Structure formats: structure tokens, C-alpha cells
Length: 203
Image (cartoon, rainbow, N blue to C red; front, side):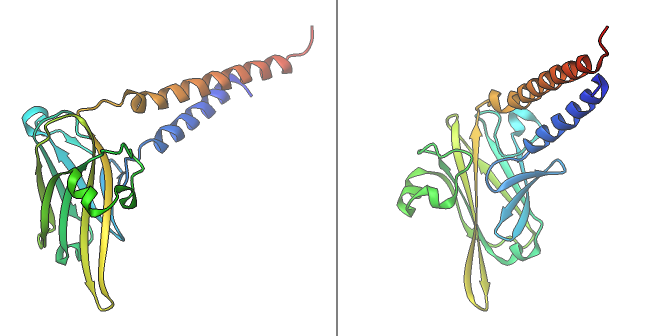
């Protein structure tokens, strides 16, 4: 394999690695540069703002600094508009991290004790939910959104759990894909060099 071929393979693998790192935490993922929240079988756009410190800049999940924050959920799935939806934010007191599930949060009393924000269940017929959040310290938090669906078979609760951080810079999360690509590139270059040397006819 020549150097140009190795570089092409390296570029492809780097793109693959970076793409695999684009997904966010828990119930929120990144699709076509848009944050999408999964709520059971339903979906909503997730957009965050900090107008006092970041003007109109949008963020997806992780909140850049400790300041007043606004989260806007726009329902993609029409059935969500007729459901009672509540929204809660708790501190990640047990350091569950990015893979947190609702089962990891413990009993309702544990959730209540860790709660820093709660909005009562309400219908949003216009399909948009605005949440104003005031955080007093940096750290890890977990958002919980519950949508209650009434059906002919009974009541179904759809719960979305999404961990996020406030005022915390995850340098390793930002740099690890660059490090991985550099290591991979160095390995491919060394392998290509040995392959090219082995193919040269002896003098």
C-alpha cells in the first residue's frame, strides 16, 4: 500500500471515529447537527440557550457556564401535544454519568431529594416547552422528562432521561478523537512504510 492510499484510508477511519463520537448523552442524540430527544417512541427537538452570556448561541445538552439557561423542546411527534408532560432536573448525586437510566435514579424519595427544578404535568397543544433554569453551581445533573399517554389499554408513561453537565469543560471528550486519529494515522503510516520497503527489489 502506498503513502497516498494509506492517507486515504486514514482519513476515512478518522471520519468514522469522529462521527461515532457525535452522539450526545442519554435520551438526546445529534442528527444532522440537530439535537433530538427520544421520549419513548416519540421525538422532540432539544435546544438550549444562555442569552445573558452566550447571546443567541445554541447548545445541545451540556450547559457551558453557570448562568441562567433556557431549554426549549419542540415536539416533532404530534401525539406529544395531547399528553401531560412534566420536566425535572436533579443533581447527579451518585455520579451515575452519561449512561444513566431511570432505574439508576433510585426510589421516588431519592429523586425528590436530589431535585433542583420541577415543572408540574401540563399539556402543550402548541408543541413547544420553554424551561428556565437557574443553577447555583457547576457539576453533573440529570434531566427527566415524562409524558403520560392515555390509550384504550390504559395509561402509559414515556420517560426520557438525559445526563448533562453545567460549567464543566470535558477536555478529554473533546480531544480523545483527535488523539485516537493521530495514533491510528501513525500506525497506518508506519505499516505503509514497511510495506513499501518490503516491495522494493533488492539491490
